[in-house]
Image 1 (tube, chains in turn green, yellow):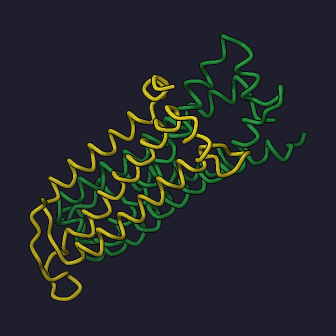
Image 2 (cartoon, each protein chain N blue to C red; image 1 turned 45 degrees about the vertical axis):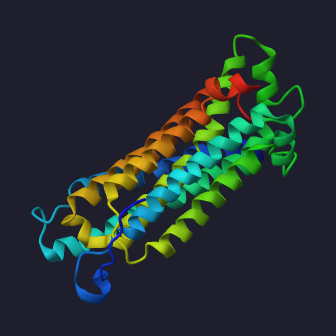
Amino acid sequence: MELTNREFWTLIHGMVIGTAFLLAFAGGLAGLWSLRSEFVTPAGLAERMRRLKIGIVAMAVATWATVITGTYIVYPWYREAVPTSAKSILLANPDTADWHEFGMEWKEHIAWISPMLATVAAFLVVYYGASLARNTKLRSIVLVVFVGAFATAAVAGLFGALITKAAAVK
Amino acid sequence: MVDTQTTTPASQGGAEPASGPAAAALLGAGIGAFVLGVFTTWAEASSGMKSWLQWNDSVGPLMGKTILGVIAFFASWALLGFLWKDKNPELRQILVAAAVLVAAGFVLTFPTFFQAFA
């Protein structure tokens, strides 16, 4: 039982960093949703902000790490101009060609919108800090941006998993 | 043009923080997503552009598209952040503008749309 170098990096890109991203998103969403001055004491707010900042910055870092490893490490193997590459295998069969022509083409582009949105959400939380508990409008904006970052990453992640099932990078 | 008022940031006087830095970040993300979308569709419509964006043979044109999108994101954020540092632009207008730009970025990076230009 062993992993090739390519399988190892595919695992890092999709599973390891992806899991960190999901955990950070879940924690960040819960923290942001309940970040209201009427729910917490000033001491509780300070403690919660520290955790929220760490979680949301971790999510932004995980998103950048995912797209960078995906684009610069895994993707070149996926698209190698050899008959055994995942892209060649998918395109060789009309029944699987759409996994590349639609799935991969969408995934490889939309994925890069996620780190931009995640970075903005992280910046807003770090910069505005505890004032978000009072500023309902800005907190709502952060939530929208944060969920947008997750939604775009989810599209990319879902297609990544399905494409790997159809033709894995080996 | 967005109406901007100058206020003292919280760090200097205890008031609510200015909305300018938030506006700059939001609009920066919109511009970054839009630029990514423009180059994605442009590369499909023009083989010359596709070749120009191929800064690395193993990554292909995706490298140029994404790096230019990321540069647009950080550069516009930095510029607007400098201009709006202590200003208070109306966030509703900024949010609408950013949402329109991000939505345009989604459309321009959607395969059914950009492959129509191939």
